[in-house]
Image (cartoon, rainbow over all chains, first blue to last red; front, side, top):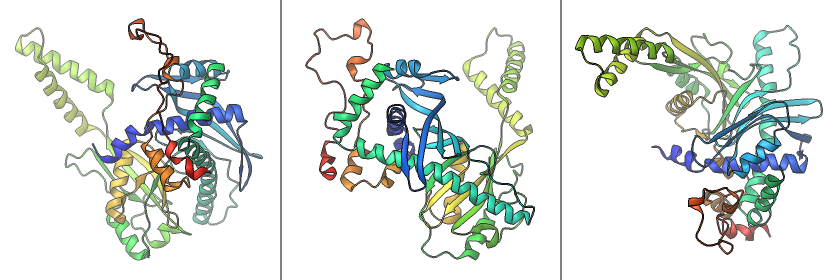
Length: 175
Length: 238
């Protein structure tokens, strides 16, 4: 087994703890964060997957209703968030994505729509669209990276044990 | 599956860009590793570079590859695959034939394994490869690489092709590696990377079967969290 695979498997929990922390952050803190582009809001979507410490102990929650009770039940059984459907908003602009916390990959990413093409050179229009889309992708990923950096700061400090974990526990008990 | 599709998946890597970029040499390297069809030599998969603007472009020039500070190229991954239901039906059919030929009520494990391999090989030889097209963008200022797909087989083939073409191994940006970009001091990063899983709920909150209960109340026992985890990194926060 390669070093990468070993690290990816043994440290997968970091991403799951991040996603669990993130959903708690969104639910309890309102999900508003300040970015250089302006205030961004992050909301929980309608699909969540929790994974237990034993591989295959998976619980998928989906639907338009309130998922908090089932989420709480899963957390209280020792599971962590593995994937979450998230909605990111900045003003009128809206992104949707599914974040895989364990591998830190993004799926089903839907960016704000691109403007109409002006009918000029198709190749120039393609390049223009590609870079507009890339800027949108980087904006959404930048929000996730900023939140991950905040998680890392807490996780590496005593505040994780003293404040973050008790707050997470209290939240999971209330759900 | 590309960046301009209505929805896409993004897998990120880091790959240190060369200090000096010879655009002609990069284009030549990409062309050396451009996509080639499966050639009937028994291979089950093939992959290579294609034009990001035109998957059928025969030759890619620097103008096709370099956009501002990005190297933008398409990645094609073809793989033969046999539908699972077809494989199961064909296995059953051949197992039944062999069982009748041999006049036995049941085939042994070795015979069934042999049949499975035989059927898989036969069906794969007849299966058409399934093509998948991805976009790859390498930011030559930050070293960040974006691939618009997360499938494991394609990811592995992409990483190998990237290494062979550009001479640098792209490292997938999993949380363990992404932590290095969180702006933590070295000691805090070391602490984070050495951390053990936290029990969010604490061991006492997880329901246990009666057989797992301790003989005495565990009021004075630690709660099962990673004791001391992160403690050494406190100094940098003050």
